[in-house]
Image (cartoon, rainbow, N blue to C red; front, side):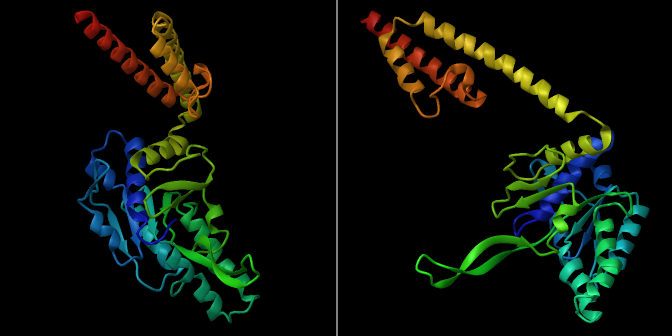
Length: 314
């Protein structure tokens, strides 16, 4: 979910491609795109991506359904039926917002029924609950990637002097309040196209702050379909990285011992380790920081060796 221009459609296409590529490694890219369908309520905007190259991936020809009002659950469901009949395994809904507030959507039905609070009982049964079943993939037994618009929320709040004023309260999905909680993974995409998770049942994307990519789809495919123990792989990767860390620390300690007679180098190391980023024992430093420290140490040693060679030559 994200504001207009955040990159929801492109992100969904790339993730869907990665998902299918992992599920069907034997297929060509053209065949992969043939497994992806998109229900478009955004005036065919998704088609502009066909043929474009993003993150090294050429957006191929996917199945495309141009859905115009009324945006009823029955019409969305009919498009799902048509895509499933063509062998589509992933359906992108771009966007779900129309199913909520568009003509023929859930809000429209509730108003048609009378707009009273008690009319929600019928609107929920006839539209909202079936919509959830459809967009979560439950009804058609298909993977579904949904996009959802967000809008800026404002509220009247008092300032330090007690005067009331308009304050931005962040963005809010243009959908029913609890709608996003129906899904397994929810990404919030900002205007720099960076995605973070507001919900993640997979636990795969905790702390993510990057563009949606085929790699995201690959991980979701493994988690959902192939039975790969991603967490075991993560533990193995961490163990491998720890071995590299220990080897790096051992090398750095050896270098420091071998060059302990160089006072300038000892002073430099002491100064570096007092830096806020490095103010901890080598074994406690993050691996990426340790690599940079190692690179800087090698450069410093090389500088002193060069100076020594020049002095001896003179």
